[in-house]
Length: 287
Length: 133
Image 1: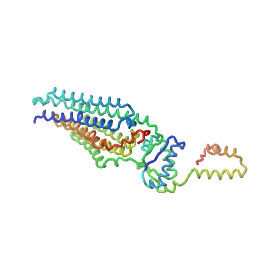
Image 2: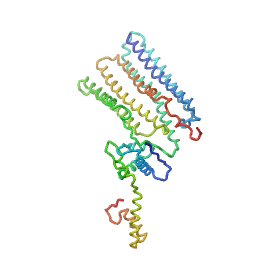
Image 3: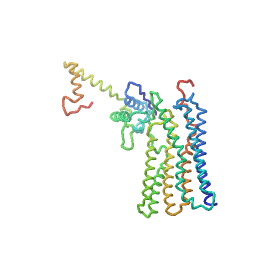
Image 4: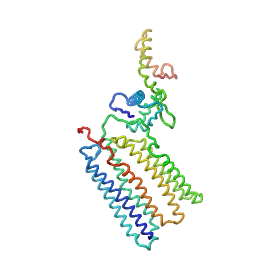
């Protein structure tokens, strides 16, 4: 199998997984919720009109379609299917990285829309009584300590590895990696603290669902932290050992793993059928 | 164990929190040694200002219902059950009543008591000396 064909398969898998399969799953979930829990009976779930939600759904669908077209066009126009231009592929590793970021853009926009939705929910929540559990939420209640320690070791290990391959000298590559990795992990720590003790985003969410959501989010952060450490160390190692052609496949695998452990895990762990939607029912309506 | 507060209730929010935690201890819904949520967590869960929760925790700590163990967090005090039954407001009322009765028996008028009480509260009589009730 030629290297170009191998790359074609891996990149096509990235394209379909992140911009077709997962968006389709998410849209199916939205359709299921809209059908089974309509705005008439569950008004608290829709602080904005269903029309606006449909626009958002279409934008999400459209963006993913555009990304697929861009991906396929780029793939065929770069001639990845021919066997004589392997050198060409060496220079597109950064492009794969950027394309992966572009693929996550619709999901990011969806998250932002979700935050806005929660803000409106909190604004429209006029209940005067508020309840809270008298139980502390601690990190290790949601994630195995061994997993957290693995992430810490991967962070330190990847830094040490890169320091080692650069013969223990402070090269710009090492400094950039150390700063990026530290910033990335600081962000994860901040988001974990926010999830554990921060503001309640959805004021109606049941306690059971909130616990489940925190558990999934914190675990995802730990896994992604591990992958980021491996990715950063791998990128520098590929460069150092002049294995640049494998870098594009490595980058593509990296995005696919990130998608599997974030979007895929969310779809698997938080099943829409298990979510308590009764909390969004109209209080005034009987039953 | 859940606690509920009502923002429309005339009872101040920090008092509602103090009462509910004490009731939870008395009703054995939480036991001595049990961990409590951090101020930040409880304030965010109840959508309250963290200063309100901090004030409630401070009063509970003063009454030895809870104890803070540094970075490890806040826990229910070993003597919390006994200490939760003490009604500090009732005790203040009894003490003041006794003092006022003694003063009245000595011929002190109500307005003189009021002025003296205010002075004692603001520490105006003995400058530099603080009176803590």
